[in-house]
Structure formats: C-alpha cells, structure tokens
Image (cartoon, rainbow, N blue to C red; front, side):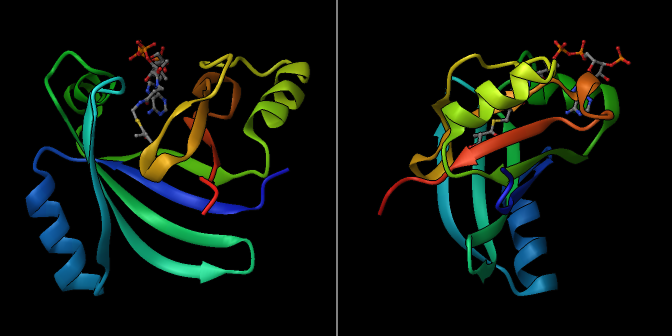
Length: 140
Ligand code: MC0
C-alpha cells in the first residue's frame, strides 16, 4: 500500500529561517510554497530525491496562528518532526483498507494537501505515536 516516503513534515516557528537552514546546510531547493488555511499552516516543500515511485520532500510548516494543530504542537513539544507522509496510489482506497484494520482515521475523506495532492491523516495513537499522512500525488 505504501509506495514511498512522500515527505517528512517538520513544525517550526519561523519558516523563512528554516528554509534558509535546509538550503544552506543540505543544499535542498524549495519547489513549492503554499498557505493552507484549512490546515492552518504556511508551508514549503523542499525536494530531496526522485525515485521509481515518485519524489520525496522535506515539508517545513509554520502555523498561521497559535490556535491551530501545528501551533498547539509547537507549544506542547517545540520544533521537530510533526508527521510522516507516505505516497499511496489511491488515498480513498488506502483509507478504507487501513480503517478496516481498526486504525482511527482523522480524515474519513481525503482533503486538499500540498502541490495539489489528496491527503488524509491517521491518528498517531493508533500508529505507534506517529502522526501518519497518506498522500496521493496530483496527476501531472
Ligand atoms: C498530537 N499527538 C501527536 C501529534 N499531535 N503525536 C504524534 N505526533 C503528532 N504530531 C498526540 C498528543 O501528544 C496527545 O497524546 C494526543 O495525540 C492528542 O493530542 P492533542 O495535543 O490533545 O491534540 P488533538 O487531539 O487536538 O490533535 C491531535 C491530532 C491533530 C493528531 C488529532 O493534530 C490532527 O488532526 N492532525 C491532522 C491534521 C494536521 O496535522 N495538519 C497540519 C499539517 P497524549 O499521550 O498526550 O494524550 S497539514 C499538512 O501537512 C498538509 C498541508 C500536507 O501535508 O499537504
């Protein structure tokens, strides 16, 4: 079901500062910047590598305001890894399969994600403490 690691989502206080860090330290390049009002984040995707099943990225996220999931995460845990996004071929089908195995779905139906992807989150409490996102890449 999981094709690849699509992205590692990292929560930060200052998006521009962290972009500069990842560019200058690891030589990564920003390929997309978006504000996702529904998710309460300003985010950037930095390309890491291309594989047979598609690309992988670092996703840097700054909360739009403190009362958002990422804002609350930062207040509670500080900066760091917030979630892992895995590429899947069909996010609706993957949700159905995972849900049937008893994993709590945060999203019953896919939502809009970065770069036109369809995304859905699984509850971290049912995935060994890891907030897990399923990502169906947009058709090109
Ligand atoms: C909370 N918990 C986490 C966690 N956030 N565990 C691992 N990783 C995280 N990121 C744990 C808490 O420590 C707590 O455990 C329990 O889950 C309940 O947390 P809470 O602090 O009470 O917070 P809730 O329940 O209000 O919200 C947690 C939940 C939420 C995962 C349901 O963050 C959520 O709906 N996330 C999905 C949407 C999202 O993350 N959007 C931002 C990225 P204890 O043991 O203390 O009870 S948007 C995105 O990434 C898009 C743009 C994209 O990729 O394209």
